[in-house]
Picture 1 (cartoon, rainbow, N blue to C red):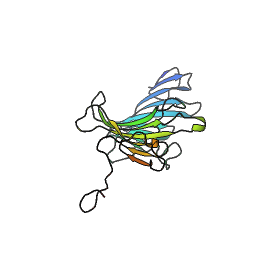
Picture 2 (cartoon, helix red, strand yellow):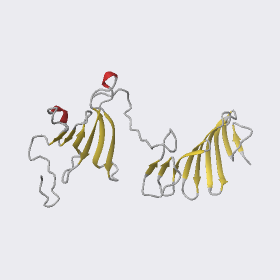
Picture 3 (cartoon, helix red, strand yellow):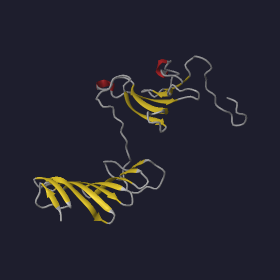
Picture 4 (cartoon, rainbow, N blue to C red):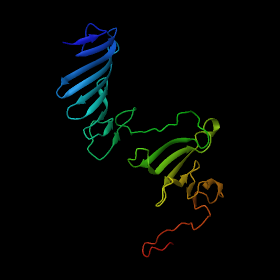
Length: 219
């Protein structure tokens, strides 16, 4: 009862093939509660497999190895087939192996970015369709990349204050030299003996307090 398009020996209920070696197979009910779509090249035994299950999860395979799944709770699982904690996505292991650390790369779509180019950012917001956000972590090129410069990069942390609707503002910066600015976006511009931590911009009431453990006074 199998139907073949482009092949005289269909392996699935519906096989669409190019000269019999490469193609797509649709296999409804191939196993209990399981429907599968297989992208194959039989001449090299290469397969990419997607299966939908009646118990509401979907998995993706390369060859015989599962590489990702969307489970019945809507979690995206990469490198693992089971997780019960609260999460939207779980990454386990890496392309170097299942027992290595997980790695998430945020890459700018060009080589050797120039000064102030954004490399990547993580944005924290709500469900507003247009993308309302209140905080952000951002990485930027601190100077042009490449050659003798290496890859100078800074990290900045942004938040939006109560009563403001103008978007997150930079509050903390770690520059490419490791200097930290709190309320200051250019800590490296200060004297080299005192710029590892710069608090405030010199405008208005700014400073650093270390709370006492007994009376909450700054010491």
